[in-house]
Length: 213
Image (tube, rainbow, N blue to C red; front, top):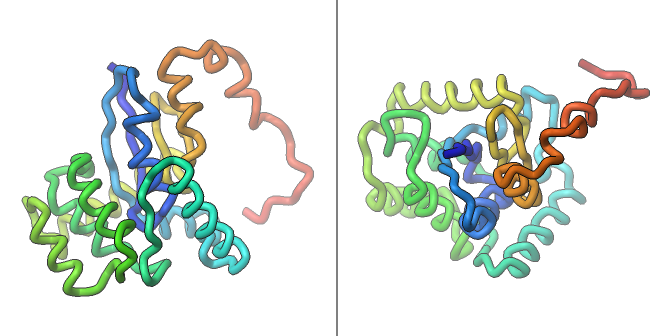
């Protein structure tokens, strides 16, 4: 059975949409999915990127776009009252439910839906406390083990080439974004394109732009 690692941060509406749509996108495909939280801000910083919400016109478009995508795909989505916000409490709550860096789909679903349905303040103290009561816990969310686990997840994802979320990792290949799900499905189903030269050849060309790195 093929295995997918789903790299995500709860702060991303695209990660939420991809999470909700994933069962439909992979229907009939024999595969397993590992759900692995990471800190998106650290990945963006490592690659010298701004988050969409840090570019005002892009922020406006992103929120309109994800609201439309939810409507178009039948996925309930209500923007949190404040966004962006600090996602660390949610990431740590998730990792407190597990002895390793992966969390169950049920845990991810509980947290994603608490954030992206209802339109409330995602990290209001009372809301976080209520959410914590709904989650199983095997270690302390504020403890050093969980903090170290999140850093390990994030560092390993960056080293593997993850630059944003959602990213789906399949046998060393990275598929980024909600709109990459059809491509991921094709790869899982053995589309011959992935065995040809196109995948490796696509990025192998010089750039006429001077790199700042």
